[in-house]
Amino acid sequence: MAEILFFIFAAVAVGAAVGVVVSRSPVASLLFMVTTLASTAGIFVLLEAHFLAALQIMVYAGAIMVLFLFVIMLLNLGHEYQRDIRGNVAVIMGFAVTGLMGGLLVRQLGGGTAGLETNLGPGDAIDAALLEYGAVGAIARPLFTDYVVPFELTGILLLVAIVGALVLAKKAS
Amino acid sequence: MDPIAGVPLLVSTSLKIAIMFGVVMLTVAYTTLAERRISAFIQDRLGPNRVGPFGLLQPIADGLKNLIKEEADPGTASKFYFLLGPVLAMGPALVTFAVVPFAAPLPTPWGVVDMIIADVPIGILYILALSSLAVYGIVIGGWASNNKYAFLGALRASAQMVSYEVPLGLSLIVVFMMAGNVTLTGIVWEQQQLGFWFAFPLSLGFILFVVSAFAETNRLPFDMSEAESELITGFHTEYSAMKFSMFFIAEYAHMLTASALMATLFFGGWDLPGTWDNAYWYQGELIRGFDASGAPMAAAPAVWKTLLTFAAFAAKTGFFLLLYIWVRWTVPRFRYDQVMELGWKVMLPTALAYLMVVSATILVLDQVGISGFYFGLALTGVSAICTVAFVFFLDRGRIMVGAAAPRHGRVGPRPTFGRGAMSSEGATTGD
Image (cartoon, rainbow over the protein chains, first blue to last red):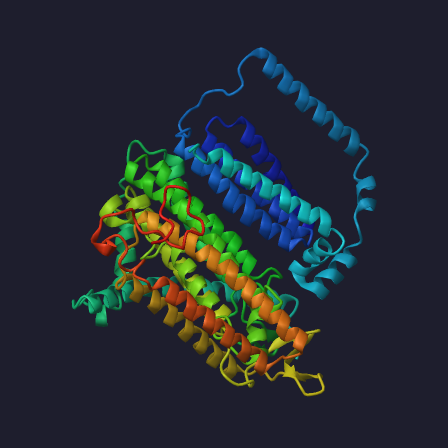
């Protein structure tokens, strides 16, 4: 059951990701992006990472993409169907980079998924953590104990970005 | 008693989904009738009373009319997105009810059935996630209509819903801190254990939640996205027949979910006073509570308890639906800039400050070693002081009077919320 669901979500995620790139309308691209995010959230649920799935939907699909949509509509880009990439050099570069990344993926995964499975932690540990601390606690506990310094540093980084945006947006007086 | 499992679990869950879907749709239909009858009562009219006794068949007549009515789609609208709008609005509105517990567990010959469709470990975060998607329906619908009024309504809706999600989430964090859990069953259980419904120890959180929920559901006084006097009907100006109905159903389903959340998070959900109805799955056992030595006491689920607690849940939810309707026909609409200032300059700082106060109080009480009844009592006192201070701060002729009556007899800059806490240069820093 979980495997069937995984392949459905994976297919939708990849298909929608292609849709983001190929669709001409920015609004269509954005909706494809939301579909990709939602499918990834579904895969998170299959991995018992419920909290991550909820955050994915809440923060990315529900807030950031809404802001994107807001900007697209404010700038009235929704009805334009022009190509962003102009010139043959850019097109060739795009194909080259995509091909390189595809080749890397094939090289990594070409020998089957046997190597990947051993890298995954045992599912029992996740189940035990979920049972003991709950869906939120299982993530919050390492975040505020083992990884508290990187976590706080990320917070400061975001704060710097916010202050920078405020300074840029503020009118010179 | 063991939890239900196997094929009976599948059957019972399917039955619960079917029944709850029916109940939600029926409640939505009759909330529209209640809205019309109550608005008529408030405005000294009769309201719809022709179809059936007391107009009780009016929602069915409305539905039938909207189904067979001709769809008038604007020629300049993009067809696909125009249809996608109502679909995206209605989908999230209908699935959010899945994680709300609506009664005490029901004993059956096959095992104990939880009266909740899906007790997912993230509980209320699931509702927050899905309701944050609801804005897409409004925005896509308004944009696809290719109409300036609809577009303005859609933009207002997206800005407003993103703004008020922040205080909504912050007002929920105090509940999570009290309950130590994000599942709604866990939150109900903690309220039963504490002996206080969270509306008392977290009174200011409740007020912030109610205001944010009103804004999130786009109901008056926050219905900026469809302000009739400014935008015709806002984002659904171009919609007719069933597509309009779908927006309508989505709005009322959101109201229903928000009311159920107010009842569950702050008024104990299906809980009734006393410990006779308590039930919670603790280490595989259905328990009623802990005795003096800390040993779990087994719960005794019964059919009459389930029915009675469901009635309690319905009554509490119905009360908040009534509140929604009553406020709509009592309070006038905010101006758009007032909505934004209330959100960012009043609700957000208040929610943050209140969060700090509550967490500090919980920390102190934990350190001193107070728990149980006196823990709730102490928090009730602290919250009451916060609430009084908040109301005192707001009621200084700033909101209700607003721009309509310039103070000091001058027509000056528009009144700002907050004492210059977040005001930029050029705006008045209090007065």
